[in-house]
Length: 383
Image (tube, one colour):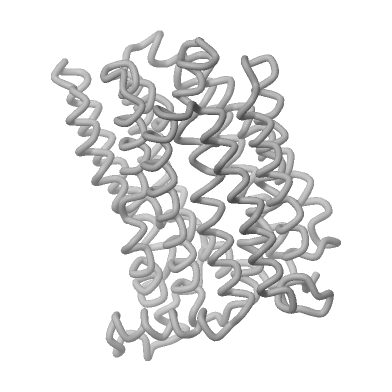
């Protein structure tokens, strides 16, 4: 809801696709420090870290709400607040996944991650459909009152989640240097082929696919489809609905699939569907393609997270997920490069280039780590 509201606000107030991509890029500003959130999570517990992060979101949302209600909000305020939020938000997915890993047996991780995704995907649908309506009905300030309340509620719900504290499991962590722990985590990933391959694939997804699925949707809605924020809401909801369907399918049948193989196949399908989406001319054809792309996204991303959690040593789990969040840094060059490319060659050509790069490098990564990703007996393909 928040990303939709602010993305539309920036595009309307500035009329600049460059500033829109800058806004979207700021949401990933903290990717470089994401591994340290994993270190802290391994020390004091992932649930405590996640609660602190979400309390920070609530404070920032309340600040933006105050600016909007007093009539002093400007795009500069939005950029500053989003930059602060972007220092923390990239680590949210990884820490949340680590909490799931702390509470669920290995054999149930695929189903657990799928169910976790169904809750976030259904929330994205509700947020996409209600965000535009709330702004139109209540104004931005009062709409942000709802956003702030939801963040406050998320702090309480996160605290209610059970967790075995990492610091209790591994008391030696409290005596180690954080930088030494981080170096140990990096070395662990580098010497584990399937984990290293997953990191490269995660970077590729964030460079080539997510800018098209998230950051550039306001541009497509306004400049190509010639629709308003309501149309943008339907587009975002379509992608989330497809992802929800994929999560439901995996929650039911994921145990019968080989995770790494499933991820590779649906990664290729994801890029192919985004390539088709890039050449649609209106919501009537674009939204169905986003539904299919969202479905493929779930069947690529959930197995990736499952492989990382299932095949990581418990004492390194937070750091592995923190390094996986570092791959979100791919959004920054992906988004920032897209603006000049769109200005020069157009959206369809730029999106086609991104999808082609995604398909080619997915194949190359699979060939490079074929033994770790494609063989039936590989750890990454354990059912």
